[in-house]
Image (tube, rainbow, N blue to C red; front, top):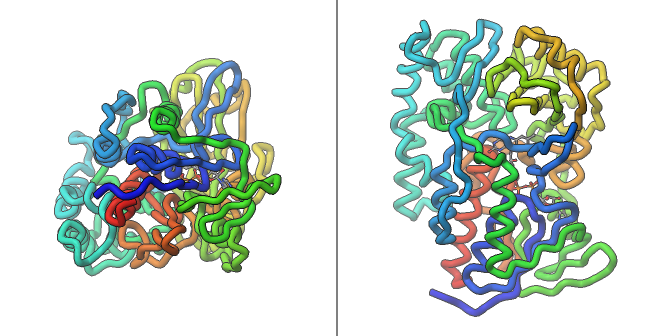
Length: 452
Ligand SMILES: Cc1cc2nc3c(=O)[nH]c(=O)nc-3n(C[C@H](O)[C@H](O)[C@H](O)COP(=O)(O)OP(=O)(O)OC[C@H]3O[C@@H](n4cnc5c(N)ncnc54)[C@H](O)[C@@H]3O)c2cc1C
C-alpha cells in the first residue's frame, strides 16, 4: 500500500546506501544520500599507470540477488555479467594446489561430488535466504532456513561441518578458506560458509565494463529517480531523524537510514560501544598494480593461511599472521592482491617487511616472481583506510558475531526506532555484495510493509 511521500536521509553512499536510495526514490520519496568521501565506499575507481582500476570487490557471485534487485526496481540488467574463467580459482593449500570447482578429470572430483551432494538441500533456497527478512513466522523464511538447517545441522561452524565430512585434506583446506567470506576463520564462521564453493560453483562473474559499472549504474538509477547525492559531506552526529553535517549544517528528515557500519552509527549518536580487536572480523591491505604485460597467472588465485589455528590466534591478538590469506586477481595488465590482516587500523604500506614476505610467497607459489618485480605503478589501501569509513580497525565485515548470529540468521537490527533504520555491511554480515544487496531488499520490504 502506498503511503505518504517522505523526506528520507541516507547516511553513507556505499553500495548499500545507493541501492536502497534508488528503491525508495522509485516509490516517490525525496531521498538525499550523505557520503563523507566519494560514492562507492569499498568499491572505488582509481587510475594507475594510465589504466583504470576498480578496487574492492572483484568477484560478482549469486547474480540471482542482483536480478531480484533489478526486478524490484523494474530495470533491465545493464551489467553484461561475464563469467570468469576458472570459477573460484586455484587454491594453493599446503596439501597441493586445487581448482574450485574441482574439474571432472581431477583425482579429487569424487570427493568434490560428495561435498556437492551435502550442500544440495540448500541450493534452491539460497536466494530466498539472502533476500528474505529473518522472521520465523514467515513461511518463505522458514522454508529457506529449513534448507540451511538440513544442509548444516548439527554443526555450528564451518570447521566442524568440514571435519564431519572427512574430505581429503587439500579439499578441506580449500573449502575452509571460504569461511573468510564471513571475515572469520573456519573455527568461528557459521557452517554455511563452508558450503559457499558448492553454492557458487562456476557462477563467478564480473561486469563486462568492470566492477565500477555496478557503481555507475546504481548512481544512475538513483539520479533518474531524483536521488540527491551529496559527496564530500560527512555526517558528524545523529539525533532521531536529524543529521548534523560537517560544517554545522543541520539536516532534518522524516526518516534516516544508516548505511554505515553499526559501530560508526553508534558513535554518531554519542553512545559508547566496545569493539575489542578479538571481536572484529578481519581487515585487509588491498594492493592494485599496473604491469607492463599481462601476468601469466589464472584469473583468480587463492593462497590460504597454511594453518588456520595460527592465523586465528594472530588476528584475534591483533598481530600479523606468519602467512595470511592472499587473493590474487589477474586481469590483463591489472593485478589486484588482497592480503588479509587483523583489524587494527594499521597503516601498512607495500614496503613493510611483512607485506614483502607475503608478496614473495605469492611470487614463489605462482611460479613467476619476476611479475611482482615488473610493477609499473601500485596503490595500497591499508586497514587504516578501511577504518576511516567503516568499523573500528578497518574490520571489513564489522563486528565478529557468534556463528548462530552470523550470516543470514542475524537478528533484525534494521529498525532502531520509527525514524531511524539501518542497512549494509555489519547489519548484513559476510557474503559481500550478495549479502549487501539482499539486505537492501529485506529492509526495503520491511519499509514497504509499513507503507514507507
Ligand atoms: C578489498 C575488498 C575486496 C572485496 N571483494 C569482494 C568480492 O570479490 N565480492 C563481493 O561480493 N564483495 C567483496 N567485498 C565486499 C564488498 O565490497 C562490500 O561488502 C560492500 O562494498 C559493502 O558496501 P556497504 O555499502 O555496505 O559499505 P561501505 O562500502 O563501507 O559503505 C559505507 C559508506 O559510508 C560512508 N561513511 C562512513 N562514515 C560516514 C559519515 N560519517 N558520513 C557520511 N558517510 C560516511 C563511507 O565513506 C562509505 O562510502 C570486498 C571488500 C573489500 C574491501
